[in-house]
Picture 1 (cartoon, rainbow, N blue to C red):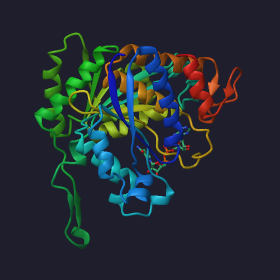
Picture 2 (picture 1 turned 90 degrees about the vertical axis):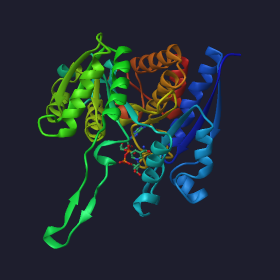
Picture 3 (picture 1 turned 90 degrees about the horizontal axis):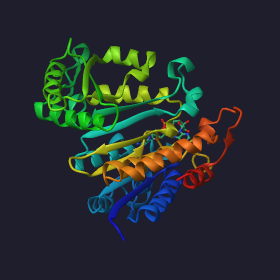
Length: 362
Ligand code: NAD
């Protein structure tokens, strides 16, 4: 028997457990095919953890994650918990502490539109003909969302809200290396997004990115102001390979890129720490509107598991095989409701049938 990896499985709420079941079936198939063992430990997170353990991220769950090589995360939240104080709600109470505890400083969000699904995009067919595949590399633990001071002071019309936008040389250097290294495994192009015409943070950002780029002469580096990048994404998304962004710009750009692909049910994400530890989860939420019906699209969760194989376990061949199986399944016409358009050759299937079809193609 070959290697063994420990996975903390945090399925969460809503469609989380339904789509997680399909990702775990894929991991079973990978185990058999590649002679590895995935030791899984299940733990509560989000709303279910609030109900069972009294808080969104129980100590036991943190301990399980610490004892693991990676976290495979479903999604959290739902109407039942929306009236709790913000810090106790499933998303804020679980995701932010997880990022902090595990030093998840880097968020990778691919936006892929498979050729079979170009008509599901909000963009015109001629703009995305043949599909596109870009990756947003977002700094996740610094920048304006976290830097101090921040707050609201004063009274009456003098009452003032303020935040601090701040990046250190070391923070920019660390995320830049991830972007360049990742680009090398793709089309070797990095576009760094900033607002260097206005923000000092961005002037430093640009300087550091250029310095780091000298160590990657095989990767092409360009810079783009964030407002232009937002326009270029809808004008011609195929021009991008890796988009390197700070926290706030990455938040916005990655959601914009995601929506160009048509369905949230298709998009995985990875949040990485230094070393190989990472947390892998779909970009979408718990989809309360369709939870419990067995109709959610499991592809985002399955591709998240594939990212885990690639980035935490170094199983590139297995990850490529999962990605190829997903693409083949789409080419065969299998569609869950969110991506079904009633076109010739499409077959509407439920969550389990989609998972089965992908396994059959592995
Ligand atoms: P959502 O992503 O859950 O749903 C938005 C729309 O996309 C819905 O129509 C939903 O049915 C659809 N959708 C999402 N994933 C799908 C899938 N796999 N298959 C088919 N359709 C899918 O966003 P929302 O409605 O804004 O939020 C619902 C809940 O999820 C809220 O409680 C929110 O706080 C939470 N949320 C959690 C995360 C997370 O766990 N990381 C992220 C975003 C939202």
